[in-house]
Image (cartoon, rainbow, N blue to C red):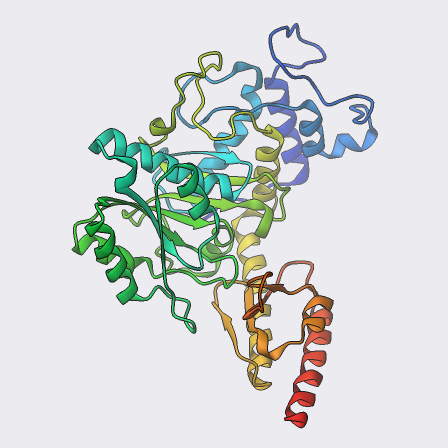
Length: 417
């Protein structure tokens, strides 16, 4: 994993060149595109601060990145300059962060991790239908109970089964016995094809599924499956903190990944990333999009080119070494938090490669959790857990203040009891 840090001046120059490669709504004779630059009454393209803000300049220019620009096909020619930046971004994520072979992955910048996950499920459903004549009722999405809600949501939208696997309450790992029982039951019900979703950090706990153990089971039992990795949270931290990660394209059992820039990279919302091995995007081709040059392969269709530029800028600004230092500093701060919780006798869950610390709710009053904006595992019933996410804005002084108040509450409860 390595790419160089690039100066702000060089980034600005490259984005300017990309914008020059696009057609301009202001200066070109564009009659057939159902869009324009952003409304001039609200967005001023001559504001002086735009000279040093390539992202905002791209946002105002309003390029549309409909389609998938890694396929080598002629896409909409109006925005080919910024489309190239998106292609470079996908290549960087696939090859440098996820250890893919050069030029052997496709992908696009999605509106978020939810769409990227559903995109994967959609592709694999169509793959099983086309290649194996599968019926929808013979296909199931398999994921842990800690997985993001986009898995059952995607299964519901696509009219296929959703199977949630139990996890151990302490380790948050998939229970092997439950995996075996539910897969056997599914086969008895006529399910023959499986979309397996593995978590490279769950949203609530930061737990990382044991992908080797789970896929070993699928391999040993000769099940027909494809593996998608939900790295919406962990994709931009786990590869930087765990040098021995099995979550990479070098693992031949993995076919696709979701990443999400608005979390660890602090990019705008709308910067999810979907990446898949070559040869699979065709299963999401919408033939009916005949007016779109290059066709469309995505759920969302039209999407902002500025978001792809934002992600590319962030990765280039920090370089791989800068991001490694940043992510390891966050996990170190989370680990130090855990050491202090342990001394206080507070039970918690923490993956050492992730910056999430989840505390048993019994140690906290709702008032303290609300004061520090801790997130519960459920909102409609009594929570079992509250999580802390150690992000860049989380200062040590705030953590110290929280721990001091938690210690006071713990001491009072122990005294009362």
